[in-house]
Image (cartoon, rainbow, N blue to C red; front, side, top):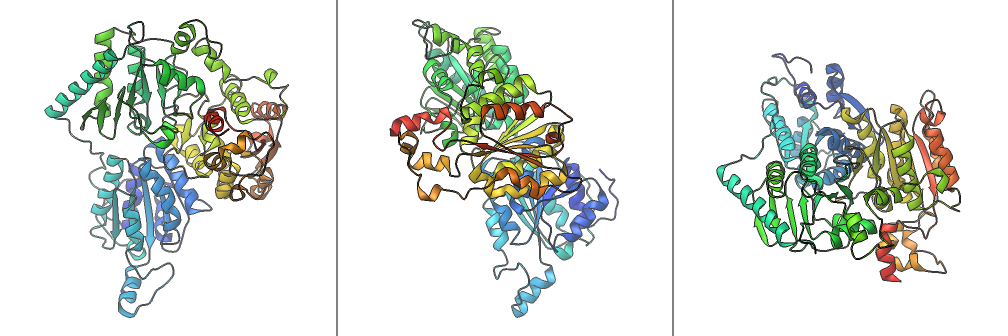
Length: 609
């Protein structure tokens, strides 16, 4: 970061603070009110401006960047830009992502003119606090900066709130303040954690004891403990992946994750039993998590409709530690911090059951209990193998399916590619299919609470630019309806030379997940009819968009695939560094049958048929 001096401006102050937080890229769409700040940002040289086609795409990129790096930022201009950014900020608020939203607004003089004679200029509203009021609903701090002497304190307060609360903040800065002098930064921005007191220690000990009692009171038929851990989003938000790994390795306890915490730790760990997503889980995972395990310990897991997948409650045989407290059965401990709970629980479990005392392969146990079960894998290794298909096993299939695609990709990522990848999954069938890929720690991003369709395309930009994952290629899975929302963000991929691979899942141009949610019986029909009219999309040749975005010195390619052998050929080309497909973004139109759906959604179809 550039050295501070006694001379500073509001623009330079904010630029220095962003750099201090380790932010390397600022995403956004410029406007005249924002121009002076961007000029200063470039002069400082620590933070690179990334202009995107849309403010929504800028927010998606900044939000994904923050998921990986810990904090991100987007900058737009007043009203028309800010309201477009609002969706991404709302998602960051729900998903607890530290996103700094900078909104450059008309100068002080113009506001005075409006108050005096009613003169409105571009982007202004008769309600002077219109932008501020809406952002107050989706941030933990929202500031309007209209006085240069107060600007440093306001900026510092907002940034401190963002990194401490792990949620978005809003800075609205008047255009004529950017070049005004203000005091230079002094003390660094520091995250403020809740204090840990004697009372907290007592509550922590009581909660750990309650978890041990829960395990003891819910043994398996053989009398042995049969608990399973459900690791969730807060493991990622609080950067507790190492602590979770230590716990499962020291105790041997089997664990699943939520979709939102997928790949928060290495999924090749022998204790990892899959992603549990309620009724929308892989059937084998659901059977292990709900039927074989006798009690469940949620660590940082959110009980959202997506994570519970059609289930409405967790039950008395659960412990759920999230949102600063922990419920164990019918007891609740309101002030137990996850960062303290994990090591304390590890110590208690090792003391009670010994090192590795909870180690088990629940797939193998459930398979052999009462005799071998043909409808279940014989062990964890067999379960994992069932989700991985090599090219030899795909040749006889007549058409690509959702499950066939993801099972083939699973083999590619695990056995064939020599590169690191960051899988970025959109909502709906894309997310249901991709959740069963086996990935290394940090290799997956999704938005599972807000579920803004099209999020993945812009998010891939931020994922590729985050310092922690900049060596990994983005692999995006997005439905055709979702892609139509944000397809122009491929322009940013092309402009930056990102070697992204974007799989557009074209299931006959209609909203498959919406049809599934409203009328799942459509997927069970033997004589196919048309889906509900409002779910039908206008058909696009998605692969041809690459020609639109490509330019001299900025290649982009597109391809359409419909057969497993097409996918095999494509994946083979992705392993060849000299192949033109690897020179820039690649748009892959995956043509699927309208009546196809991921196996995890079968519970809805069977119920409707």
